Every structure is written in structure tokens, then in C-alpha cells.
Length: 129
Image 1 (cartoon, rainbow, N blue to C red):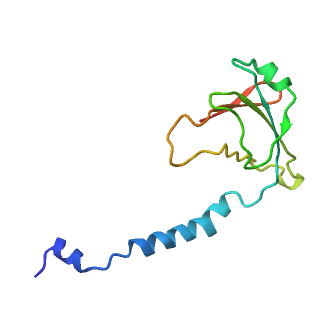
Image 2 (cartoon, rainbow, N blue to C red):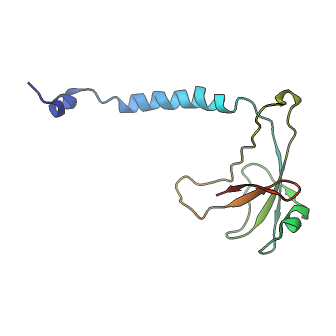
């Protein structure tokens, strides 16, 4: 009689098939259910001439429009983004989140970008890194 390690050698290795099915369920069912509705946001950017930049100065600066996929900011530079949008009336009472992708490279660890989200009054909300 074959032992446990010998038996597993005769079993089919279906990992690739199972992983592709899992990926399909994640992509087609689970991820769309997490954020089932979205509205576009308007994004503008101001590139600071140097650092540090006081919050009041960054918020008061006049940003320029920027589009998705456009390159922004020099290495070790400072850029202030103004993200605006309108929450649909039908979403009243729901938790609403802004999903912001700063363009991270999955194959590179660290030193890509960091940020701090502020409300219009300058109150910090959340760090991004």
C-alpha cells in the first residue's frame, strides 16, 4: 500500500485550474460587489516649487486639470491634488469612499509616493503610502 506522500504523487495537480476559477469569481463577482456603483471625480494638480508646503498654501494653490494615466510629479517632488465630485442623492445614508490609485508599481517596493488627504478646511483625514 502506498503511503501519503506516494498517493499525492498520483493525484492530479489542478492548482492552475482552481486558481483561474478563483480569479474569475473574484474579478466577476466579488470585486464588483464591493463597490457596485461609482461616479467620476474631477482631479487637478499643483506642483509645489519646493518643500515644505504649509497646508494653507497647498489648499489655496491653483491646480491644473490632470487626466487618468497622465504622469505627474518629479521624483521627490511635492504635488497637491484637488479631487472633487458630487455624491448622488440616492446614496444618502450610505458609506461613500473615494478610490484613488496613485499609480503604484506592484513590482517595486517602497519609495513610490506618499500623501495625506485633507478636508477643504485643512483637517487631515487619512495618510496614503
